[in-house]
Length: 321
View 1 (cartoon, helix red, strand yellow):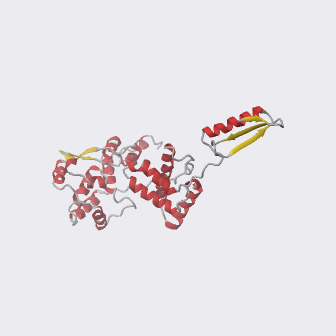
View 2 (view 1 turned 45 degrees about the vertical axis):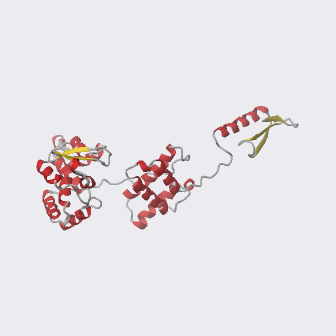
View 3 (view 1 turned 120 degrees about the horizontal axis):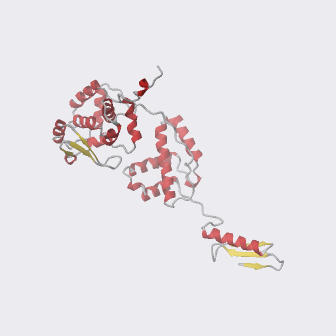
C-alpha cells in the first residue's frame, strides 16, 4: 500500500511474503518513485525472490543422489557411475554444493596428479561425470545456480596409438588360449578377433545370438544391436560351446605367457583393435568398419584410417619431387 505522510513524503508499506512476514516500509519524495518501488517488490515476489532466501544446504552427495533418482538409474552404467560420483564427493570432502567452486575442483585435480599419480584421462572422466550431474539437475529445475564446472577446460590428451597384433603374435596368443584351463578362452578370443567385438560382447553371447553364418551382438555400448558375418567353420565351432564362462582373467594370463607387451589400458580391446587394423590394412573401407564395430561417431573409426594402403597415397603423386 502507498500512503502520503504528514511530512509530504510518500510511504510504501508492504509485507512481501504476506501476512505474518516481515513488514517493509520505505518513504520517497514522490508518489511515482513510491509506485515504482512497490512494483519492483511485487515483481520480486512474483519471481519468488525474497530478501533473504534460505541457503541451500545440500551437499555434493545429496545432488548425486537426486541425479541418480531422477536420471542416473536409467543409464546402463548408472549404479557404477553413482559409486564413482560418491567416491569423488568423498575425496572432495563432500562440500556444500552451493559453496563448491571451479577452483576447488581445479585444485583437487592438481593434487590427485601430484600426490596419487592419477592420469589426466581419469580426471577428465570425473570432470565429465560431475558436470553432468549439475547439468541434468539444472535441466530438471532442481538446481538454480550455474554449473560450477561450466568454464573449466578438460585436459587435452595426446592421441594414444592403438596397439594391434601381427600374424605371428595372433598365432602365439591363440596357442596359449587353447592350452588354457579355461575352456571358453580360446573360443571367445577367436570370436573377438574375427568380428572386432568388445570382450564383454564376445563373452556374453548365447545360442540365440547365432544364425548361419553370423553373430548378433545385443546390449552393446551404443544400445544398438549389430550383426556381423562369420565363417561357416567358426559358426559350427562356436554354437557347440556357448554359453561361455567368464575368461577375462585367463586372457590376461595368456597375453603374459605369449610375452606380448601392450600399452596400459589396452588389454581388453586388443582383439578389437587387431581386427580393425587388419581389416583396413587388407583394403576394407572405413564406413563398413564403422558398422562392424558399432561406432556411433565416425571419428572413432577414423583412428584406423592411417593403416589403409591407400591412405595419403596422393602425397607421392602430388609431391614437388
